[in-house]
Amino acid sequence: MNALRALALCGPTATGKSELASLLAQQVGGEVVNADSRQIYAGMRIGTGWPSDKQFARAPHHGYGTIAPRERYSAGRFVEDARATIAGITARGAIPILVGGTGLYIEALAGTMPLDRPVADDQLRTRLRAEAATHPPEVLRDWLLAIAPDAAARISPGDRYRTLRALEAALAVGEIQEPSEHGGRRARGEPARLTVVVLEAAPAALAGQISSRVHAMFEHGLIEEALAVRREHGDAPALTGIGYAEALSYADGTATRADAVSRTIERTRAYAKRQRTWFRRIADAVRLDAFDERTPHALAQLARGFARTT
Image (cartoon, rainbow, N blue to C red; front, side, top):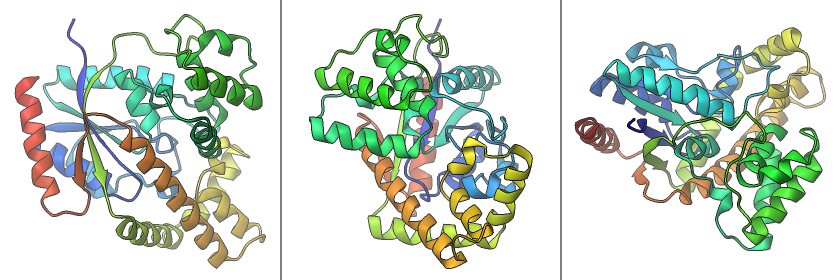
């Protein structure tokens, strides 16, 4: 059986991935598959940056708003869902186009894990702390399940501290195990063969885009959206995400609107920096300037070449 194949368009937040992906899908007969860990949540369209109605109308989109904010979602579950979606798209004769900023999802689907690459101890600890501040505990556990399943089996799923220590220990000595039956959430099947395109941008240009995007989110209803999610789902894990925590702080009177906006911009820039670090580690990726006017044409050429070899 041939391996599943797909294009993957990834990169830091605010690099225009949704726009480019929808235009590309329209142009080459593709369908878009969400590979963003936050856009999976229903009712969180503004704060997680879903595609616009115009973008949705250009081509079929999959995997947006499919679970409730109170639910947990993992890389293993993403792989299972994405494999099924890609298979369906391929069977229809269309091109699967993954799009998102969650590097873990992309690499889990491809069967690679950037955290299993040799790094210095200080770098490893710094990176683990940064990822732990960004992702829910389930993501850390997925990493441990993937590289040290025996260690994961000995640790309670909710024990964040021991999970981090086990990750650090396994990665520091390079004792990466083959996948086992521990933790059945990992997906079965061969890794997908991905043609990965990473959108890059100069830090100054990206900072300007992030600032504009955050201001627009607050102007177009982020606070109301955060309150609506909290009314329906209580203290859902998804509400700790960038933008939502700040919007609720303002709504609860513990921060000014200006402070909430400023803090969201600050956290988003820090997140984008971590994303850039992650995507730099992906070998053999095609790297394009997100804001170069020639990029849409380059993407279309790449997609047509991909179609000819499928």
